[in-house]
Image 1 (cartoon, protein in one colour):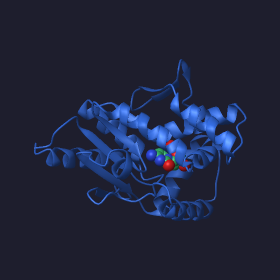
Image 2 (cartoon, rainbow, N blue to C red):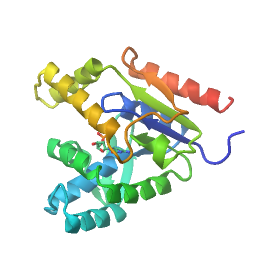
Image 3 (cartoon, rainbow, N blue to C red):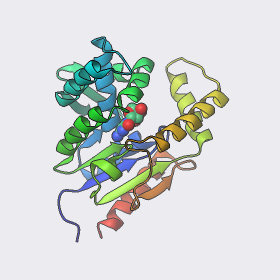
Length: 229
Ligand code: DC
């Protein structure tokens, strides 16, 4: 028998198809969805707007910690049209900006910031949630009842990234994106703090040859099985 509120951890690298699948799974199970990447992005956006130096020196670090500690983040909208708010401000599109993505990667490497955001993530998930990120099954909710690690071949993830950029009217070279992805995978999986790796009890799902609907179905089926339903 599995005790306590149902927490489903979904981890994996960028381009593995986590976000869309996590949102649809949460909707299907009637659970809140927590996008932890958006939280690192939100701290990065505020840091950028306040002119905080990155990578941070000790003073800047203290300011980042305060931003993370009092982050008024809220997730709203639908799986088809997800929204992220900071207080009353809709920051959904601001969080996807290229400079914010870069700054988020720097901000997420600061242990003190991670510590604050992990507290917030645990609070948001305490009544049950689908929580998506990089370290959810290993660090944030090591006791989550259900853990998934989504992956896909670098070529497939690069193609997805290129499609995303094309939608925003930008073009990019596929080989260059593949190179960046391989580099980022190596950096993420070898970093000292919360390295990207599957929890020992995570179900690894390769989404390379699956449609979004097939991924959600697989996650839903595995969840039911795990819960004994
Ligand atoms: O998933 P994403 O691209 O929105 O994540 C934004 C950044 O935050 C990315 O550099 C990975 C990092 N991140 C992290 O270190 N830990 C998490 N739990 C979620 C995201």
